[in-house]
Image (cartoon, rainbow, N blue to C red; front, side):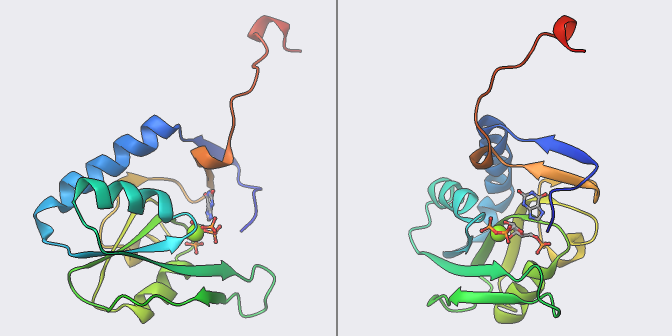
Length: 157
Ligand SMILES: O=P(O)(O)OC[C@H]1O[C@H](OP(=O)(O)OP(=O)(O)O)[C@H](O)[C@@H]1O
Ligand SMILES: O=c1[nH]c(=O)c2nc[nH]c2[nH]1
Ligand SMILES: [Mg+2]
């Protein structure tokens, strides 16, 4: 995935926390008993959901995408040990092309797949998400950013 998207959508920690708590509200009555975080991006919402839903059984699956691989496939670096079930939440931060979600769905067909952000291409692969983002927009997540000086408008050329 390249960073050369036309538009940028900047997400603060507060905004990310708020959106994830909204997701927790929507999942509260689901009776979920386990969480599988899709590392690395899914680790942050997974921790928040585990706290809000009081779920103590939390596992991770570690994946890396082969950006330049001709098959565009995903490498599973560490498998999960948690069992597939209708009461399992698979959590990622976002779905973009849907390639990651496709693999997770094939590995955990019974589970409920959730993300915070969804772009149109990947949206059909997610059971629940909070915020729609356009396909040509890059989501800048809070852990990828830092506070920086901003030049006054009047001084900009
Ligand atoms: O729908 P897709 O096009 O597959 O993109 C979505 C995936 O991309 C990002 O992970 P990334 O592979 O960048 O790794 P990271 O989670 O370790 O940052 C994001 O966290 C999702 O897992
Ligand atoms: O930080 C990110 N923002 C995105 O929009 C995106 N799409 C895939 N992977 C992504 N990572
Ligand atoms: Mg990821």
